[in-house]
Image 1 (cartoon, protein in one colour):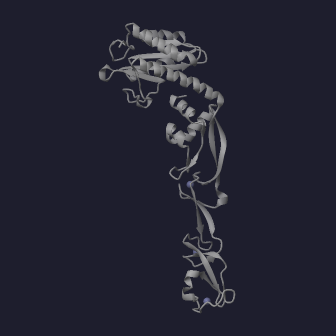
Image 2: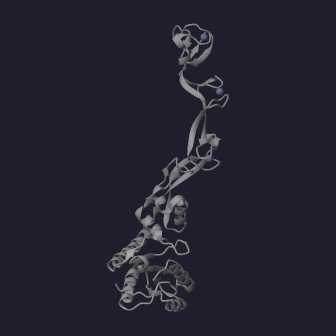
Length: 326
Ligand SMILES: [Zn+2]
Ligand SMILES: [Zn+2]
Ligand SMILES: [Zn+2]
């Protein structure tokens, strides 16, 4: 799980959806989007699959049968010709001639059809209540046909044909919360001590290799600026038994790509013998810890040791052997 994901889960214990007309689907998870971007919902579902979050029913919505969007508009239609050009108003039924039309058409109290003046309600005319009139075909009706219109794809359909869309809320599990507490404590311990040692913690969003590829590391700390900038990559790898050499090697390649001067790797619980041989050869510093809760302390201790003695840079780096000492 990435650092961004951890920070996200920790920051928001319950993630709820919000309706919006600005997204094709018609809803979004605003808190999750800050971390995951556009595809926040699929990332949330991944976390559920990984057992890190729980999903629960939040709301039932009607969705477009074509595209699934819940961004629907109810539109009234003329039941005779299907036009949406209909107006609602009080209508008058003129009994002598049978004309039915909106009140506004009976100008000066006269029937627009037969021209006779209206006398008395209940004697020669009635007001059957609000009705609709189609401005296209002239039909007057009490109940317009209502259809749903998808604001996303434009599909028009009957309510009965709408698709059921269930919106979910996402909740962090207590067990995970405990694990995250440990992870965050480790992280702040590292940041605090690295800062004391004169390092800046780099923003993970800005770590690009010379190749142009974006790389993700547990932490990247640097000191100095310009060509004197020393970058240290810190990584924590965990394995069921031991961290294999190929995993260490790909990390080494990424560290070289970002021009790292030093690379420190912590393994939970340990490295394979091949990994250690490789790390010794390439000047990669490493520590082994039984669990995450002692990783940060060991890493700082190791880094301090390195700073006390003349240190060689990462083998293969273009940077030459400046001392880590201040
Ligand atoms: Zn009509
Ligand atoms: Zn009339
Ligand atoms: Zn649609």
